[in-house]
Amino acid sequence: MQTKRNDLDRFDRAILDILGSDGRISVTELAARVGLSKSPVQARLKRLEQDGIITGYRATIDPVRLDREHVAFVKVKLSDTRETALAAFNAAVQAIPEVEQCHLIAGDFDYLMKVRTSDMTRYRAILASRISTLPHVAHTSTFVAMQAVKDSAWAVAEA
Image 1 (cartoon, rainbow, N blue to C red):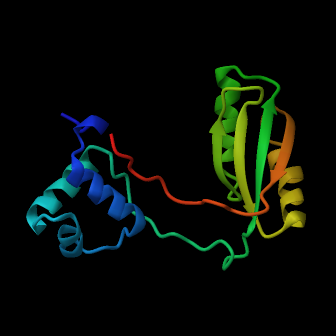
Image 2: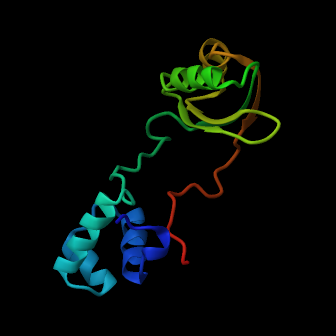
C-alpha cells in the first residue's frame, strides 16, 4: 500500500521539511532533529522513497554564478490543442535547456514557461530561434522578472 498525503505523520513531515532545505544531511543528524533514533528514520526514508514521495535528491545551483540570472516568464498560445499537438509541443520543449519550467495551463493561453538566460539579448535569441519555432506556437507574450521575492523548493504543509 502506497503512502498518501494523509498518511504522513508529524515525523514524516518533519523529515520531508528538513530534507527540502538540506538534502545532504546525515541520517544521524536527521534522526536527532526529528526526535527519533537512526533506524526508524532510515525505515521512513526508505518507505517515502519507495512510495514516490521522495523522488530524488539534487543540488541547488546559484544561477547568477552560472550567468543565468535573467528570468522571463513566457505565455504560449498554440494554434492547435489536440492531444497530438500537445504531445509534439511537450516533446520539443524538452530540448531547450534554457526552459527551466513549462506548465500546461487552464486559461486563455496554453503554456507558461520559466526561461533562464544570461541577459535580454540571449533571451531574445532563444525566443526567436527556439521557442517561437516550437510545434504549433501561434503567439507568445513575455514577462521579465525584475526580482525574485520568493524562490524556494516545494515544502510540506501541515494537514
